[in-house]
Length: 389
Length: 108
Image (cartoon, each protein chain N blue to C red):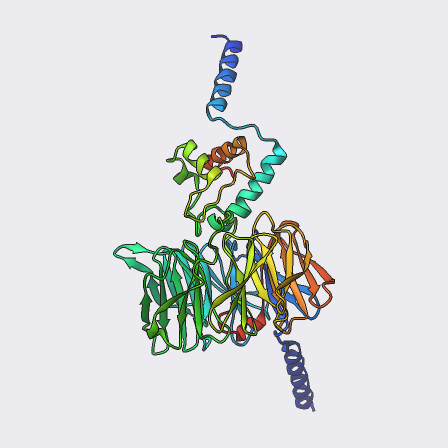
């Protein structure tokens, strides 16, 4: 009898413990709070913040990638910090300081490696996603004793990583498929001062934006033997470049059908290009220097935010007509926009007003406002399954 | 020297020191605005803590070796063919001098 009671009690306790454990992460995300070294874990179905995780160091210009099970966020801090945050337990699972000055990272196709791009010391380091132990260090030495800041680091199919050398004017393709020994292919003289890079959503083309000249450098990862080709040369020809108060981002190129939309540099324009022949098809006049030009998941519209001093405004461009169809002012310091996986909402960080605004992408109506301390990047877990994010 | 003249001398030398450092007159509120812009917007290239990023670090230790008029010129006019833009549209000469002084002191 006594034994029976004990057994039942044990079974009940067991059941309770398991029940409280179940939770999925597909509608979660994080909002970076850049000034306070913290992030908020948010839920996109409930439009609310679940908790705040602190102690992540200097998060100015921080970015995030997700483990393939969407449980862990890897946060790349400016101070070289790499922090693995557990979205279920709302805590830091592991944190290392791997460099002096960093600028983002990427996760490998198989999810086992996370790569970090460093300004200081210039290069890329690759870590185990599990333990954050160093797998390999790739100093970006482009001339004897000269190390470059690395930018535009993305993952590519075949367990490869691609990045650009800002000071070295090169693109490096790193193959991590064979073993922990990287096979590095270097493409030199790709153009002056690559400032960011992107990979097309199919993982085929790596494109580096050039600050030092008009145009971009394109590498076909199906045919790396063909080398880097220049595209969009002289897209700003005949017009004086305007000062750029914040470097545009190329991440997640807005691709819609046969078109790609992206920020011009030094011109208050979004550019439209035909992907079939990589020719520029349209200059779309915008409110300021675009920073992010981002496509809704359905590609029907692209949303654009701007550099200082126009950073209180967002414009929406219809991809079919390439016209600006909506303009609004979420507030001072609009830094980032993130769409829910199927795109019915967009979350917008308004840094100077300490809030995140959630909008309906169909009606442009505001859905909710969440308080946040100087919010910058917003990253939802569905990025886990997208090449290049 | 009696107490009074010591005090007068002290006040005089402090006044001279302040003038030598050429702290431009900027109201407290405007100072806060500039501080915020430097941290947040200059910080997008130079880092929120001014420790450097795509642009070089703006820590006092490095800047102290550079002349005021050079730093003022860079802020005012930018550096051609680099990402450093001119800021004269947003800050007047006095405000730029104020930024230079505070950057060199490490008080921004």
